[in-house]
Amino acid sequence: MAEQFHYNGGLINGKVKVPGDKSISHRAVMLASIADGETVIDRFLHSEDCRRTIEAFKSLGVHISENGEQVKVLGKGVNSLRQPNTTLDMGNSGTTTRLLIGLLSALPFNIHLNGDESLIKRPMGRVLNPLTEMGAQFFPMKDENKLPLQVKGGQLQPITYRLPVDSAQVKSSILLAGLLTNGTTTVIENNPTRDHTEKMLSAFGGSVEVDGQHIKVSGKQSLKSTNITVPGDPSSAAFWIAAAVITPGSHLILEEVGVNSTRMGLVNVLKRMGANINVSVERYIGDEPVGTIEVAYSELIPTAITEQEIPSMVDEIPLLALISTQTKGEMKINHIKELRYKETDRIEATVSILQNLGATVFSSEDQIVVKGPTELKGGSVQSENDHRMAMMAVIASIISDEPVTIDETDCINVSYPTFFEDMRLIMKEIEL
Image 1 (cartoon, rainbow, N blue to C red):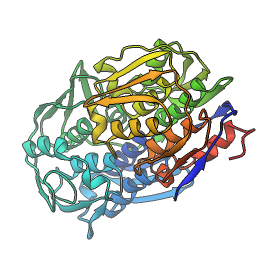
Image 2: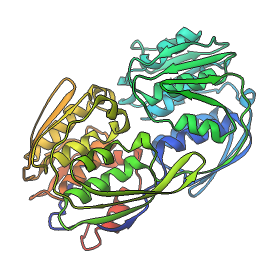
Image 3: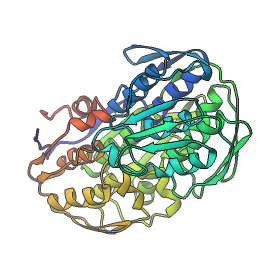
Image 4: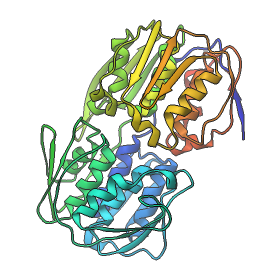
């Protein structure tokens, strides 16, 4: 159902703790499920995507209990997993799907996976190809290399594989398959991607060797249970960073946020543009750095973005485009073709939303160009049932002259169920 938003004249002020990191929440449940012993996960993100991971491993026979933000997983080793008696529903979660396919490829099961109408359009060949090379078999029910899909796993062979796309999901899928395979599996990255899987394996007592662009994992390792506190999700924090930096008079402190260097691309780019942002590392949860991000309204100038930076900010590109509408000059955001294969084509969706709000913006195959500064005038936009597009449009409404009408915002629950609660917290003088 369409909703209207208009916060013009307000500002972002105060302190906020964003929910737990989605990427880490997924991986914590997965590795806890194949480890020995009970793992306690605090600050787990209870989003729709992460629920798909919990439900999948329950179907595989793992005992998982939940109490608020705490999740307990009683692992009994990978050999305790059992053949599910039903199709596993991946919902909208590409992370659940791609990482789970890696694990299932090394198990002696025939398992059917399906997803919602958005997920079944997303390409899975990028994980199926290397896993097929390792010896797994896949049988698409409809379209080649897409869900619904039958996974026939079994004994695999290790491989050395150079990623054709910069994708932490593909890397993680291969590493998880390699973890259950005799020998050493090696993934070669062209550019650094999120390293949460490598750090999480270490937290469970596993061993991963990282040598520059080469990530190696030895198979048949035994993982041990551990206790994990999930840091705040920097991709969720990014919405408030964007809001503060473009809204005059704003000053915001984000507490207990994960500040892993592979996730700080947007912050690094904004600093080059002149943003008033300070990041302080205060502690480590396992190998994950956690800290505070302080940000204030800033006058920005364009900067060039390298291809190497994109993996560390791929989810934040739409927000960078929004920020660029308030930047003095032409901003070119290049090397972003990967955005066309997300929940929706995020290049086209971003351009459509910003154009409808009055911005001067256009795109090519792997580029968005924004000419600023421009006043956003408000209007009606389509979220394309994509959580990040919906939230970006809400943030745009803070500086729009007129209301912004968004066709659908329930999709925000995919990654940030408390988005509007947090917005009320830091916009206290605004009636939402």
